[in-house]
Amino acid sequence: MKVYQNSDNYDISIKRNNTPLTIADRLAHNKIKEVLGETRIPILSEEGREMLYEERKNWDMFWLVDPLDGTIEFIKRNNEFTVNIALMADNVCVASVVYVPYLQKIYIAEQGDGAYLITDVAPDSGAEWIESDVASRRQRLPLPIEPRPFRVAVSRSHQTADTATYVEQMRREHPDLEVVEQGSSYKFCLMAEGVIDYYPRTTETYEWDTAAAELVLIEAGGVVRTLPDHRPLLYNKEDLHNPWFECHRFR
Image 1 (cartoon, rainbow, N blue to C red):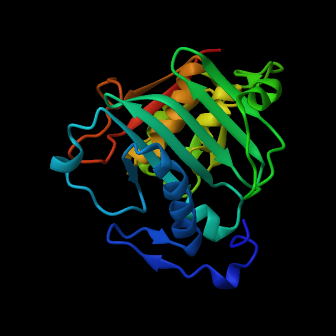
Image 2: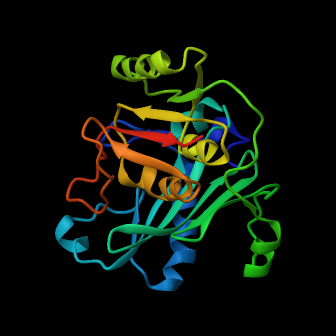
């Protein structure tokens, strides 16, 4: 957030996959690596070194991390960026945290134990939380909501004609449909809250973009399936790209 407030010093570079990287991505990666490194569990991070499949294919447990998801939104200064940390066991996410620094919201989930939201969590490099702190402040997801139109989330910076096709298919079932543009994994979290009902993704994502927030949504009662074949997303694949997918929240 200190970097975010000083847009003249983002130190932007372009990675090999033609996506931007800022000094905030690198600093966040270094801090997360420092802290999670104490667990001695391997870390697969978007901003870490490239790990060959032969090196990681037999991991029984690892951290899957995106230190700053939504770098384009960070650069645009529209506040829609997150930090994604997923604990993977046998290539399935079993616990996760998604932090939305600007909005000071943390989403947490544990396989079989539900998903929760904690608000008013200001960025603080000295913060230390114990389990009772979390338990006393968390709200179970989804949250109670008032009646509203059916809402579809689309990526703010990554839309295609295929995205529009899926939206229009849903509009046939829900003529009152509203489209909400949103960046980063925060779309999953809004669905977990109960604010969004459907999210189709027909452009490139990576495993670290989805793992943590997917568990938040699933534990809140949602579902994520690949398109067009409607299978679960798989993790720690040889190719870390995700296929197209869609997310549903059951109202």
